[in-house]
Length: 238
Image 1: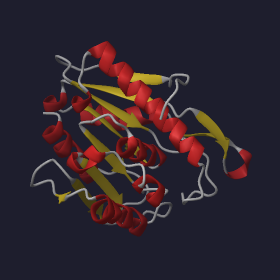
Image 2: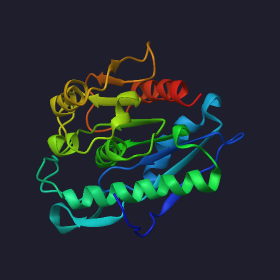
Image 3: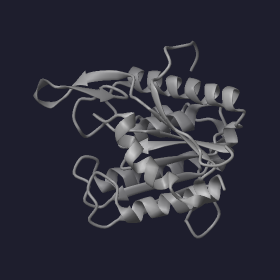
């Protein structure tokens, strides 16, 4: 990823105490930084995360969705179930913008990249995962909510050597109708078996991929998922 692109529009939730870590939270298809703020505010209210600054970027483009409506997107798609046929250029363009956003945050705030977490829900989680796997930045961690790994073998050929030490939190509902649970689970297994990221759990160390399933949850988040994400965040950016 090279070259400079136009910066992403962002919404910022400032830290409630001395700033020592940053979370970049990417919304899903058709969402916005404002929509992501509802989840971020819940997480930010925890006293143990008072030191965290939350950056909520807006997707850089609009695509034509169902019924001809323009909706915000991190990349173009052929259906509401992302596949390897999705817009590869769009994914990498958005990844480049996220890298530039993180570099800017590190330079302006003085926060090291190891104290910056990148993640998101649905398309935002998909794009965050691709970014974290191929960037030279050694981020503090990645989280993926209701997402999957697109272009797995393309990404396998591009993966950065440090990702085996990258903490990854993955959450997926068993009743997800848009990105079925098995797609998310199989993506996580690909990261473990083909890319070599070790498997872990919330009860063990932070390094590695922590996959969590939520019975009956559709394409969204619930209280249990947010509780687990909060627990993971406390481990990686305490």
